[in-house]
Length: 161
Length: 161
DNA sequence: GGTATTTTACTCGGATAGTCTATGTCCGAGTGAGTCTGG
DNA sequence: CCAGACTCACTCGGACATAGACTATCCGAGTAAAATACC
Image (cartoon, rainbow over all chains, first blue to last red; front, side, top):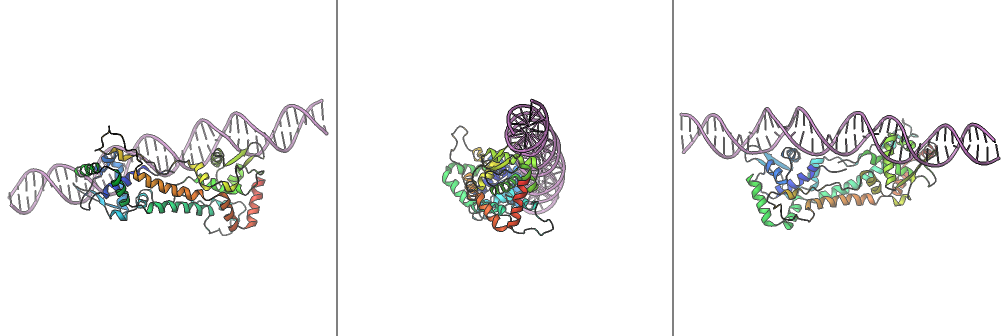
């Protein structure tokens, strides 16, 4: 059970976009070259983010993407779910109901399977952790750890493309 | 990102085995028919559990599986990791190091990527939740919710096979 | 100089293809408990 | 009645088949800013 590599790309792109203002657009091409990933495929991830209303793109030359909301209002979970979907990591097929001694005519136990419940709790813990980290948080810690000159050069490089 | 269906099977099988004593063996065939899943494929899952030292099998007729430790000492995480492996759900490819303004000769930033750190924290929260649920806990809640006559009939059915 | 046209650089979305993983099947080898056979 | 051989039911592990998901790549359509041409 591994997350797609698109998830990593999407998060990094979102963090990058967090560093720009609402009147600045960054093109898919720039984001792809910046991160060293295939442009066409990254485009799919960005489309998914746009569909989830996290970023918005504009057409034509000097077009590109920007955040659709302020960075404080976008959580890691939003980004992950935009790429991976909102389905839970554990799917309960209710195999307990194949019990050979169970009368098939009797109505099924409608309670959620105890196993599934435990798995769902863990899933929720994972989501809770992701929900409380925002793009603003990430941008802040990147700002603390990365040389500010490098950051500025990156900004310019992205805008030029 | 979804867990394999083998995970569900493995957990249910472990819970079932928790209901038997150390001198009782349940065969793969019995477990497979009981849960309505393909015997040969379930066998792979049980082999993985055995390799992780959670259950142990014995050969020959009247052979089968039993728990390798007491149910209190086996957590859901043990079972999940036996099937899915211990790798984290998020793989950091360190795409930040493809930054075009970064001098390739300069030594790489050895700090863990901030994005990866946040993802790892969520991963750990998930594991923490799974670690604190044991097979004994699951067996207990099943015992509370399922008719005891049905449980007894299930026990006998499994031993007979 | 202002307007109309063309060029250009983007996004969007569908089509396609390759590779890997999950799922499932099949079978032969090894093992050991129970059964059978021969003395 | 007992020892040895046999049978059978089980696990183990490898080989194989298939389907679906993931990872791309390519291209045409649509769009709008910028550049150019024309009056």
